[in-house]
Image 1 (tube, rainbow, N blue to C red):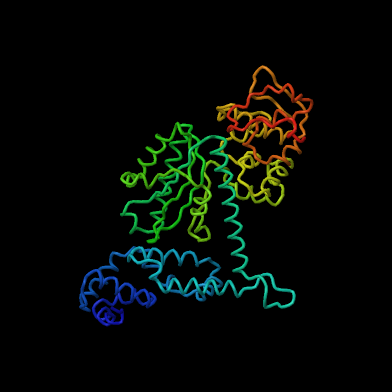
Image 2: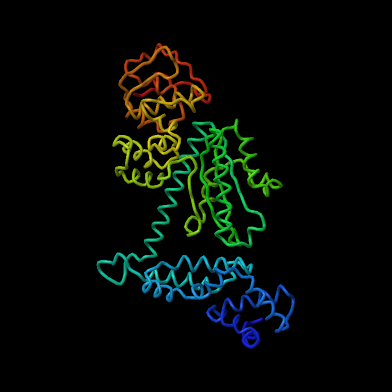
Length: 447
């Protein structure tokens, strides 16, 4: 049913309602009429018109007041922004989203929004920012620059998530959980802002409870939209095996609607790289929010600056140089986050300093890994395994780094054998948890 069929009835019997609908685009008037006709299972013009009146009477005031703004085309929005000096594009998109949520239609069923997005993209493509030297009408457009920045953000998020996974799994020996957290059905018909505030409040409460229990959380959270544009979380979370049961109970207590499907809401991470790509698949959308758990708030800008070998705040030139070199290797390496001082918990950042904090160090192999990090960073060796004997000596670390890039494999043998003045014949170091690999022979040492 089209709005034109009931417009005369509304104008004659409900002139105030008719005036309120005048500023609304005809596409949305027709969507309202069609949706109401479907819901009331009637093709009577009078009956449908009465239901439209009831619908408007219960419609949220912000949507009613936004009829004019949400009905403007992209060109009209640009002109209004030029006159008023206000940014209105995002506000108009938000009004249309709340309107779709209220009448219960999907984004793909909104032709006006699709045309708006197409016009916006065409405008970005036509706006040349960096002209070609041979032809001023060609060059890099606003759309090209936007795509480049989106790919850059994706790459930074993906790299940080890989390094975080490497650090949590291979150094801390934590377990990885993949959380899919949604809201109850009553939040699928409310405004987007209400649903977003609710799910964000619950997740912040979970983190606050666990922080008060001194439980370290590491990971990445992605807040994105479901098909009905209700926000939900995909969270890549790393926790100590000792705390897993308690962490799950706190999560399910805040998201009680997930209890019956807890095996789907909380899963083990088996293939991290594929999971990271899945979580970041919609990262180019304006309403997808990506943040890291347990890392500094400025970790993205910190990583970007060091990747481009630029100075950044409290980082020394040596830290920047070492981190930059390992970033260029394009491999997951948790040592990078330590060198960047990228953790919120200062006890982790201190692991890469001369004054170490062993709060999170539980095993000898972790001490050896930190020893190796210190060899690379400070070019000196300190035996952290034995409390009785501390050995300081100059290290040929450049040879270790060039030949062996992995901080976690064969660390015991490399750290000991690559000290100056060590007699390999008297080698008596016990390789604990060396993954079954024997120490290299004297002939194969090659240093």
